[in-house]
Length: 108
Image 1 (tube, helix red, strand yellow):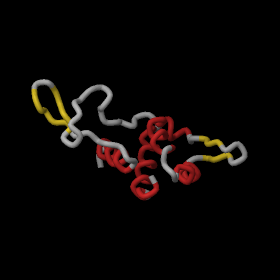
Image 2 (cartoon, rainbow, N blue to C red; image 1 turned 60 degrees about the horizontal axis):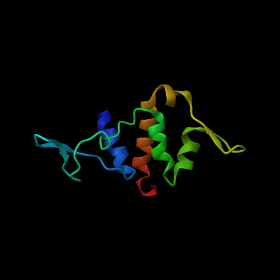
Image 3 (cartoon, rainbow, N blue to C red; image 1 turned 90 degrees about the vertical axis):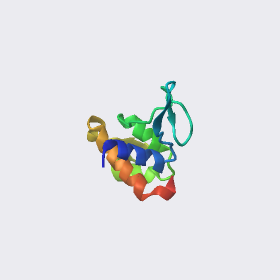
């Protein structure tokens, strides 16, 4: 699976829309499914930064379970500690979040 395929599946599994661009006219590119023209605000997400992945995951109903499974959780302070490898290797968090999202689609 390519990184783009993983981003697409992660985006769609969490209620996002993935644009499929095609050349419509000399004016630019249009999304086949929603009709939106390509601009800076409608580009597909790359999830190249851990905070982008966390923003999506934190909106899920089952986020606490994901956090308990993947992060160190301090129940006294109700905080989380994201392991360094999820920050220094952002794709590792994307892979974990993608896998969780695909296995728990109904919980979004």
